[in-house]
Length: 338
Image (cartoon, rainbow, N blue to C red; front, top):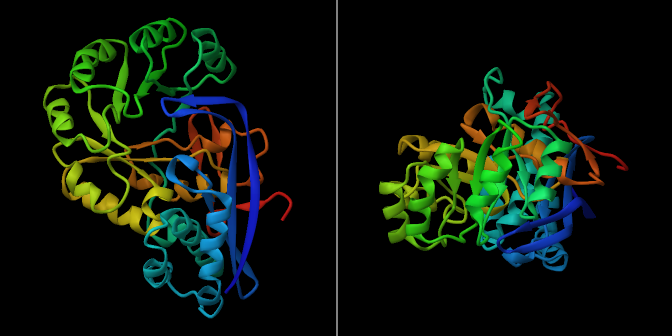
């Protein structure tokens, strides 16, 4: 295979604020793997909150270039196993290469990835659209600009209930709330019946990631289901989340790609948990990789590319929450200037 790096500076349509901070741009590294005249694409974002910069992403990718370029792709899962000892501490890079490998294999086989997995695309969940923390007027304006059947509302302020009460006056859409670890156990339980009455579907990651005792209390007393995000990053976390959360939210970059994500989904099912896949602020490269998992999911948050003003890729189409899977080979991605 041949490895190429494609750095991009993604620009957000609006400033995006969550409990951890605010940003207007997102550096991202798209990687491509080529073999026998076909090219597959994957993506890793330089997310400083997780210690990723363009410099260390590039350094890690270059450290495995010789290994990649002396390897012939056969099965993406075998390629993942080959890379893992070298990239165990960098799931973002592992994710990008794994996504590219799945895309490449699909192109070599002339089939979409989900078809190679034997999945039926007839029943897939709608994706939410995320509204970051802002003034009530700004949040309402964003909803009015893009009417959507499901909104994920970022919370973590001193007036979270007031935000939901105000937004509810402007739409009948389903709400999902994401506190991004900003709440206490008691606060979560107290808010849960009030949020349920406002047609909130679930609460995502209300507590700090390692507050397992607090999450056990919330799990037992919340009027709404609770979904793990920061508490469920890698494969061993799935079992830890059992009986602390009702569902897990898998991020491909946090777990290391499509290959481990499928194993995490299978493990969650065995434990009787529901499954969601979420996204970072990423382009259509990463979003189209997520789309391949849709037939396996209960919920999905794959609006990352919709938040951008300069998406560098063409990929899966999303309209009013509905994702349109195609029969294009691989993940169906192409770079606009590639």
